[in-house]
Image (cartoon, rainbow, N blue to C red):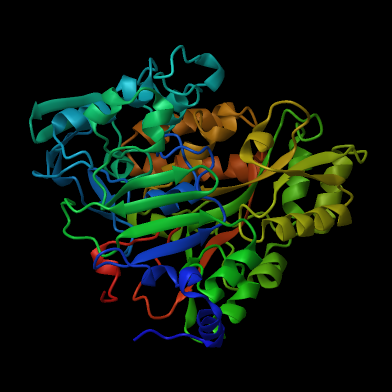
Length: 546
């Protein structure tokens, strides 16, 4: 039964026949409904390539609806591995993994997926360029200069080696069997396959595209939905793929619409313009839940909000100043004020899931809130009040602007002169021109191992070092241990030391709180939110009949 609140009813009665506006899920195509989702942003760099678009917003539109890998993440469950485009996998040795491909899988162009497509998806042409499978070396975008429109973007080889530092390639055993060969041992090979950036694309579709940009705007994948229309910074529409190997998908279309302002997302949801409104701050929950026929689903997710320091800044080059900044922040006060206590302060850059493999460092915590210690550290550093720039986006992250303003006041209380510089996009945040200082970021556990996020984000090929924000020689050596050792005790010792370096001795970042996602929606849609940014619109997570 369709339920309309008073606002819906008045809107429908006042509309003319030609201008009638129905909620998105009523705008059905054939026998299946369609939905419209208001998001803060669709992608960061306007491509739909998971190797290139390493972002929270990218996760939402990519998985599990568009892109798929050999091993899939259990998005609606424990976030662990489940069979995907491969039905089974076996360790040959510490460096080799054999996978049996699912037979009969179709790409959106009608081709069957085979071992040729898998091998191509991890090839130099597709992602690695001329980089070599050797970990521990930072790869900079400046080292690459695309010569043709078909060449990879300059940043992409470095990102690829961030995700697969030692992958040598994929061996084709037969049409439905492949072997993944690594140059070094790696206990995380299976995890890397269900992480962001290991998804499979059609070789033929790549070859037929006139340019990388053309391909990345409408990639041909195996997912339950395929790209129908992509308008950068405006909207992305996915349409049902009826030859999907997992069976008929429940929706005809999914349209993501960029609506940067929270109030506009909420108003659009309540008026029926949108069926979902994402990234709601906690102070908007009551407004949605108190409206008849609406609800808010929420959970903490495998993602921590952090601040990153740039040590090219002469003031921040002194670790004493950075340490002072970490001791100036009252994390609990921020969680209570901005999040109404609905998220947590994690044990540093760790996730509870690490305990399942005995890789969680017990007793570790973020730097204590201690203003007097912060003042003493600044005195030791002979800090004279020099301005520290804080490049800030307008709520790319939920509560980002308010959080930034609160932190500036907390820093001010101990004598730190931090000045907010509002920026429009991530390009401006990372612009090497001008003076950098502090910026916002988040860190995700995409593999159930502390290699993410520590090594992937802060190691030799992490974005922090590729962008020349921060570097530490000892941490880089330990990153290689994490990537290559099969000795659990040795790896655990390494990650414990890395936490000491990056959060205490030579701070690269400060952890603020675990992230939480709040999604407003119609109560009668029969959909559940995953404990992730990703939104699952496969048949198992959509129960409303057409």
